[in-house]
Length: 209
Image (tube, rainbow, N blue to C red; front, side, top):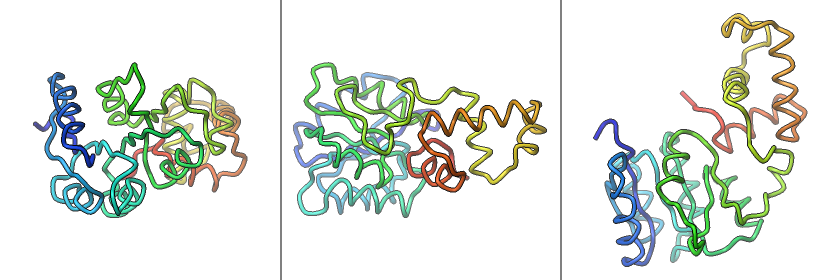
């Protein structure tokens, strides 16, 4: 199980959980380690089972999926949350991402590819349903996101390293690192390092130790 992507399914409908479990476990790289029917149970099981990915329904009774996401990320920051929702409103998407979700996909999408979405968020990528209008916080981002090299440099920026230190570590010129840094900021629509660090952490663009 160590090399498998462990998943906790959270949805208040048992039939939906059953369908998603069957869909995910068709892939040998994924194993469902638990199921929760509400937000409180989701937080408890996430801390107990320590899954790699939590597939979280946004509209849960009582304790919402967004609140549950906030609690899980605060207590188990290694967990990656993939939000599932029937709603595409920009405000909900923004709240989910700000709570710490790395993905937001629509449950009623005809072409819902849950396996691909789980794998992508497990790799640290941001996954947004193509039907969604990008929330304001992501308006500056290129459609294709950041390149692998830019994400690598962003990781070092978040770690507090200077252009010179990053250049030495990656065997690049200081000028090349500076260009990459500028491109990252342009792509994300951010122009201050402090804001960049907060944005990268909040949106799961970097891996925290």
